[in-house]
Amino acid sequence: MSHESRSTTPIFTQVDVTPAGPTAQPVTSFDGHARLLQGILAAQDRNNELLEELVNTMGAAHKQRINELNQWKQSNPDLARSCRQAAEALSRVQVEYLDTITDEINDSADGMMEGEFMLNEFVDRFGPRLAYLNGVIQVLAQLSSIPTPTSAPQQ
Image (cartoon, rainbow, N blue to C red; front, side, top):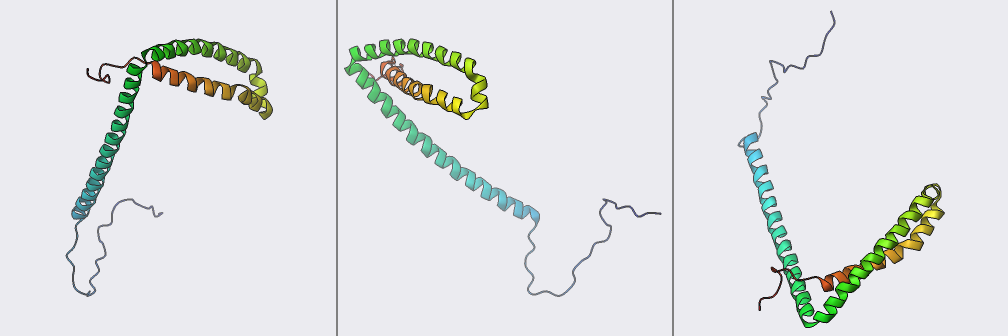
């Protein structure tokens, strides 16, 4: 007959009956869990307070930037319209440029995957121009955007 290990709990357990020093009040696992949960709750409350401060700070900076931008647009309406026209024109240029880039990628994809030289050549050729073009379009679009009713200053 072989001995099989069983996963059942033993019926008898060992109890330490040696005399000890001063007896301490036994802490039940419920008390430990309650203290742990209170600590987690306190940390979560502090985290929420910090997040609220961060949102308020970022929201205030964003509102100030929107107000400044709207004031600039009201002070320079002709320039704002010109920025809109330029942004639309550059967007059309960007579409054509992206078409050229995608054609180049499709034509030389195998070469870019096989060797690092072709990929570096592609990035050097198209990367900076695309990044600068996107940046200019973004600035022009921000300067020409129509203020929303919620962010427009009261008259």
